[in-house]
Length: 317
Image 1 (cartoon, helix red, strand yellow):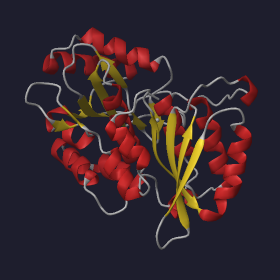
Image 2 (tube, rainbow, N blue to C red):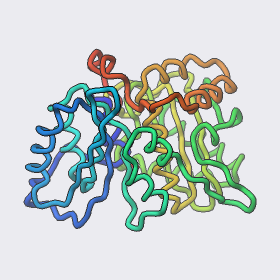
Image 3 (cartoon, rainbow, N blue to C red):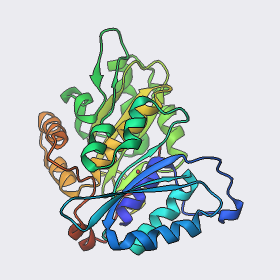
């Protein structure tokens, strides 16, 4: 559960400190979070959230999962209430599985309306699939990690001594391959990093930024020759880096890609297989295979595995 909590915090910049409900002034729901847990935990969780979110608008929707005693909850919460909700879920239902967490735009698109109407994992998986974005004339490619990552953008055994050296190499790469000034890339990464480390824990980091002048999303996978100190929440050095760059203002695309990272990298088996890949082509195949549908999506480790691991992974847009 520490892993899941940290991932959600890192995506949305949620901090452990929470003001009393009486001091919060959030005018509308801003975040949707999906949680799967045993049906017996719904009532105590609802009571806890009713108490914690007093005076704030929030909604809980429940969908039963056929042939199981578990249910899927869709929670619509103010952004500053998410951390407390995560704490309540992990306290009341330690075996709960966290699914997708998205910040809801002020003006939802048709895709968002489909997502909000989704009542099952299968529907949610379809609705959460990133929309096609035509960023250049004639270009119409689904913006997911497996579509965007190419062998040319996989850097294995990168000779970088620290985070600054990594950012310098990412900047040089983007300038050479995409024509974006290296300094601009480095500035964007450092600006984001100043808000809090993009180290997720478990040896994974996801430095990311919106870049003016970039015409399409860019994904790079970097494996440093020696693990890097990244100020990760679990204090472990980073050996797997996913760098994300999107055009300036592409907020939905940015969130989609971050959610894609969260879904993949909270899976310990995926992390282990990815780190075992010995070539750029193997890395790309790993991402492609992980994206293939396999029935009901399972964004978090199975409950038994989650109970058996006390270590964490921590994701902030």
